[in-house]
Image 1 (cartoon, rainbow, N blue to C red):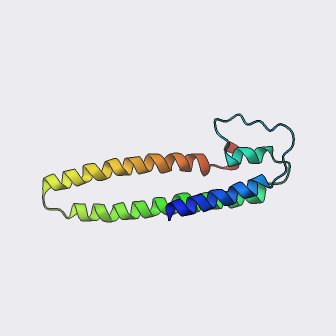
Image 2: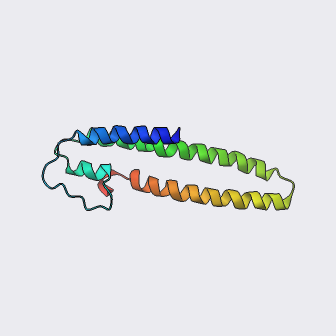
Length: 120
């Protein structure tokens, strides 16, 4: 479902962005062609679409991140009830590395996509 939501969201945004009229320079000073960078080149008012994209980013980032954090909270609760110290340490070591990877991935995405417009 994550892949399906991502593909559908990307396709919808791409189709909408390609319908905007573009004028002036069509050169992006970016490594890759990102949708928000393309919106800066559009001649039309894109504020409504930018707000919709922001709402989609909140949904697409915070919902999975919240589900992951809730599942790890349940795992942590189960780990805290373990009686074996070795199993406790092993479970915490595994979970902490997974949580670090998830936090780095989602933290970077949230930093990039959930900033106010005047910082982009």
